[in-house]
Image (cartoon, rainbow, N blue to C red; front, side, top):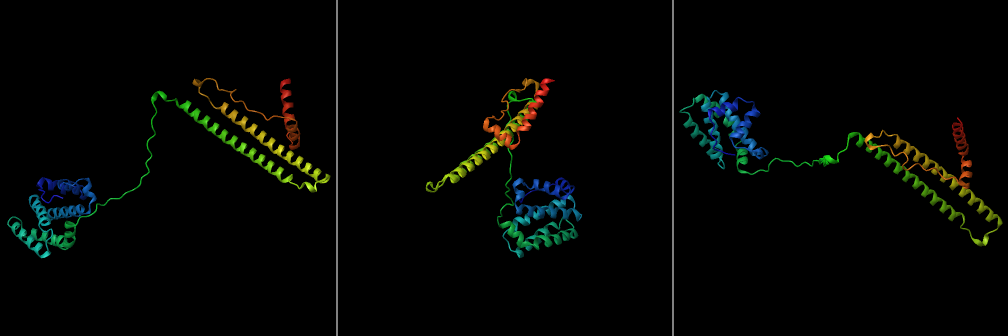
Length: 305
């Protein structure tokens, strides 16, 4: 803070014509404040001190010229009273006011003196602490999550909006399809693991107690376990074929931009589950054969038409 700032009547007129916040900002500019000075409590207190003295003088009927004198009085008191005891500060003030009484009316000086003693002198020890003790700036640290801007691609690599939207939808379908295949493959592996575990548990028998009945029962259980495994496996294959066909139709049904050409409808055609002898028997067992037969009949009828 600069203690030797000279204000002109024009400067005073500009400050008092503004609202308090605006007037303080103009006064701070005259006092040489910068952005960092506003973070220090000391500067805020001294700014209020000077602004209040200036406004009291103007409101008490001091002329603009005399108001600059009262502003100067406040500056000199801060400068000369730093590190000085209160009685000595009162003597310094009396001497300065006596000198000003030659040019300023006594009643007006009395009004300003009442204000000065009610503020500066009343809180003299506080002002001494502010003037003599260094203080940490009022600042706070806040962690802010900042999302950096997306790196822009070169214009030559840009795509038309309809092409980009088509590729995004296609990528979503392909990602879902891959997740579905992964899930079905995991289920097949679990069935295979369960099958091997059952084999180990069913055929771990002491050879010394084997007889015809035990062997017959073991064969029966093995046949039932194998049939159950084939049934579950075929259900998974049917589900896989259904999902494969469903995703295939969804991808080919997407509105494809004309600039990309004809859609690849024959690319990666869906695979139907193989039907061997064991598969045919299992199909009959789980009740899928009538549906397949009906589908074949409908196909024959449509060909006949």
